[in-house]
Image 1 (cartoon, rainbow over the protein chains, first blue to last red):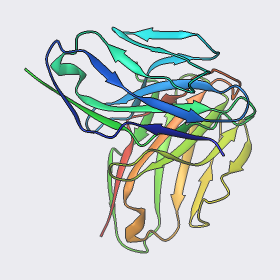
Image 2 (image 1 turned 90 degrees about the vertical axis):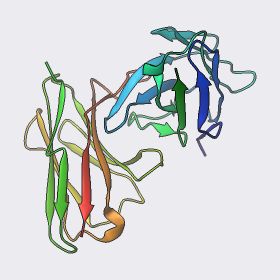
Image 3 (image 1 turned 90 degrees about the horizontal axis):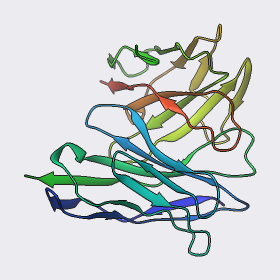
Image 4 (image 1 turned 180 degrees about the vertical axis):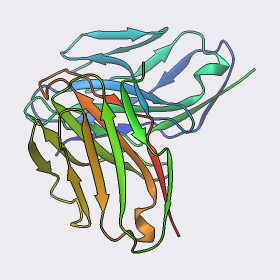
Length: 114
Length: 114
């Protein structure tokens, strides 16, 4: 079946450090891939997405590249800020799905210290 | 200019006492989703509506029901809440369940069962 696996957290970084959060997936066909961010006490916000192999999604300094050969969609940011502290969810939507159902990874908590 | 609105943000109910959570949207999207997110876990889809068509996930307990009286509103009814139903409930919308179309999430309702 379809699944998403993220690196375990929490990830603790100093401000301006480089961020990588690993995400790998298992899916049949050609899924669409997403990163969502959840700030404390809030709902999920779409951070970026990619719909086909080699697409790069980017937003607010975050980037992720859809790698079909390694079934990965790692999230990166060159210089994190305290305001980036949140929980990050990798998700997929199966290409064969006609319901739009998202399958989420377990989430990775990022803590950025000044 | 909130797009997906959930009321209330915090709900306390008693064990076994029916409770209804509300979601409204100003996006005129066709699809509305309800997710359950337990503490430190990924959101899990309960069901969704595509226009008036209701789609239940296979593992959603019968205790959970939903109504969508019009495009803008969708309700989650928990007929007899148990302690295990305490969670954040997230409503999301999308224009169409087609490939690559992102979902927009509300801020969530945190349900406490006493």
